[in-house]
Length: 276
Image (cartoon, helix red, strand yellow):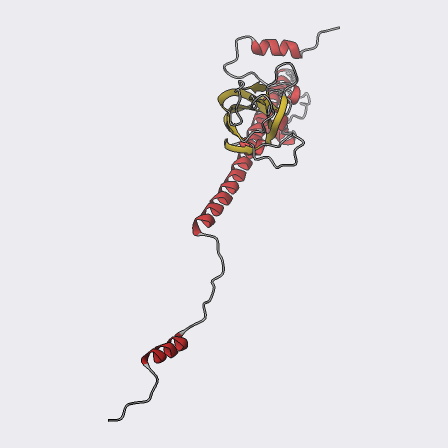
């Protein structure tokens, strides 16, 4: 009986594997879906914030325009009533040319001065992390935080001192009044006894970031001479309690609702110069 002289089974399988082998095609690298969703959510939140700030400013402008218009209409009505009262009784007498209230209001130029806008805020300094160790010989830093308005109001407050910590927790809040467009500055110091306090870092929160409320971490700018980049951050929360306008623009701001009685009268007397 004759046997086939073909290749062995192992050789045949090897040849089949060689024929069926296909080159591997690498797919282009893409960001994970969860990362794409986070980026899209952050962009949408940024757009909403800008829209809310623009709407708040437009509402303030509209309210001031309506107030000025109503004021001019009342003045025109008073002037018209005075002219009627002083008009001659004789029908032949020529009556002066009078302007209606609507015409006076239309001709008046309403100048919107946003420097008269004020905002009462609740500012809470929550905590800090990764602060620089300014007392590396005797221990770690003893930090406290100073919060102050950068514009005309000059409101400010500071937290308590937390001893020997580079990650202090304060959870302290206070009410502040700021002007339109005014930023808030946060400065973290290391409390030193017998010498000037060391600045550990500072950061400013822009008015546009807090106009509709803010709660997040802010990266501190390191004031040391070290070339090492600082990762220190400060966590704060800002809530807008109310907005109002004051007469006289940048001359002063109205006291908050919970101010002691007589505060407004004292402020007015202080702002009024004495007669020579």
